[in-house]
Image (tube, rainbow, N blue to C red; front, side):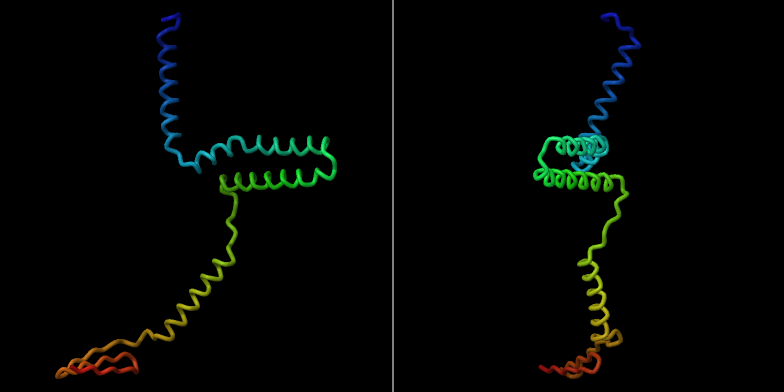
Length: 145
């Protein structure tokens, strides 16, 4: 068929089937996975472009306009590096002081509540001739009809 051998056609068929299978797998990826793959593949190129923009802008912009441009470029580069670190798993999560304080407060409150309530105080209910005695710890309540 048009000068191609059977083996070449079979190889092309296998390549197309592989591309279709890969497309199906990529279609099931989440947005985070797609973004991670894009940054992972092209992250270094993006950083190089950002550095290039900084160098070119330093050659053509006046000094007064250079500081904000370099600041924005450095912020973008820092964010990109943080994303790349998060993707590779080399970024350690910072502890959140508010969350740490809340956990400590909850632990203290649990201890305080267990002391106030008392673990050994059991509740007893007695019914004698229509009178119900309810006692818990040192407290006793009597109820009658």
